[in-house]
Length: 152
Image (tube, rainbow, N blue to C red; front, side):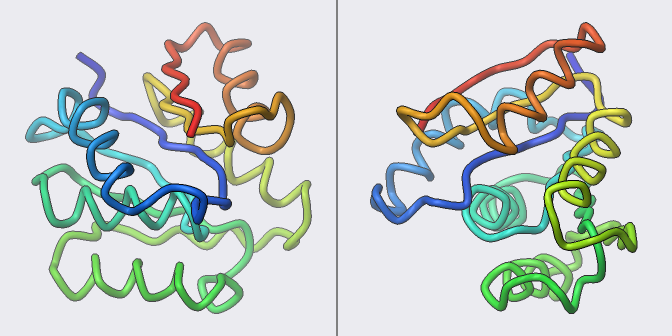
């Protein structure tokens, strides 16, 4: 069982009801959400925030959020999800990488998370084959790390 897991996923989540994401997390994240396991999340809106909130409420795992630049630069809903986890005493660490708020910065953040993980769980937008989620999954593949892909 992996001791560190990165979650990556689409920022576009409005096409499904929130209940569907809860069911996905219960089915596919819960088996890895054991005491002592650390989850790395990107601190963006969409899957990052939804998974962070679910993990905060439903598990006792360790949580680390990494942002490409500064926390203050993240969208308001992402900052709110991070604050909720922090206020609940569930957030171990927020890592501000100080990079650009551009593709290069997001890719650096994703590599940082994958480098510290033993597995990556990706939630790409259904019907897509490119983007940050696939970049992260491909990077994990180059490192021979297990990946689970769950299109949403």
